[in-house]
Image (cartoon, rainbow, N blue to C red):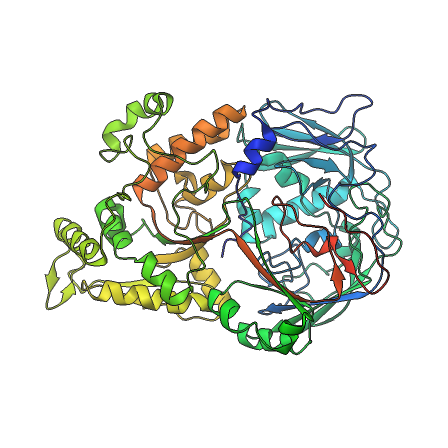
Length: 618
């Protein structure tokens, strides 16, 4: 789910080796230096770099790639909400906004946090990251030939802040924009020390104010938008398909951040009602590439003559990132879930080993640390520094928090029956009594009946399996069934008891942790603080993440957050995977993937049958 909420992935051991604990990079480009930025490490590229090293700069332009998506869209208005656009961050092509609209900064895919100027020619960042100024690049042109202006930038920001998707309304609500110099803007945030702020505003897709005037800016609009990016939308049929055409006069086609990218003349995106029909359409050659998320389908559905012949390539690609993590978050606005022992009982009733064997074919991993096996993960006994920092909260933390990284004793692994017995005792101690085979809600005196919200229908069978475990101890779990838009609204309105949450921890800890688990947004309707957590200790650890100014400080803060989060049990950890399952018809070439970037970044691919070109290894 949190893919669509733009909440993305985290640092791995590979990153730590790459960073070798550097100091923070300079935050202001000086005379003669490249226009670039990183909050935490020295940068790999300069303005004199010919291209990013992971692309093929000789990749031929031409050909077509077709992509299948599950779902629908009813608007091409990327600026206003409601309306479901093609900007779905769960499905390829990823970051489609940037196929259509340029932004001030472009992130490289082989660095932890390296950003390079595109629509800007200068960047100036405050030492505390609370303010950033961009000077506009005069070369930027929209597809109608008009230059990007300060008015366009301010218009984009103000529209997204006030009328955009709930994500934008949330993350931009405490940000203001003002003109800077003759041809620039300054963004200011009330939050100091937020290392994601500069990249947040720097990667906002920029829209032309002049195009949206005269009544075009409606909530749901099928008007073909005007952009400045490498593609434009040329044809569309609402809810069925979108055709993107490469802009041959793209103003930045020779810019080093764009070399070797966006190689297809056409990208067609077809929409399907469900995953089953999409898989069959893929195997029937109706589209070219599919990323599979279901372990069952990956094991069972991707077989046949075309797979045996090699006409369809099937790859399992592991990354060095922690990957996608799935939780069942408790809505702590409900008094029931403010009791940690109740939350622990629910966690004990989830049997990962059984679920993984029966439903995932053993392809998933249990969630142990938020940060996977990286240096950021809490391990064993807390260090002396960690203990000293947490000392003032020791009475607010469960016993043994400093003794091991998890509340579940992994060495003395319990059987399912032992876990159920322990869960029953915790529920009994919490005065959630059993009467006529049903647990009684202490707040209402009625049988305990809980509703779980979920946005992906493939999660249904997993939840049904968990519901059986809860039923065995007298708790009824009801699976909410709603139309997709209503389901998303219900989630953002926080009208549920539990919710399936997908979290792909980010490269720089702090921002996403605050959005998901910080108390500041717990009572804000439409926020991504779905669990409504108000935990002063966790708030303190989030503050440590945000204030960290060196990799050493970041590592220490992340370990403390990881330890506290796991011990407080704010969600049932369901499963984790750091694999990408991808199948595609053997028509394409691509760079050899780095463990740092997503293999489905099709802006790096090209048509194989145009001519043979060397694949550039990272």
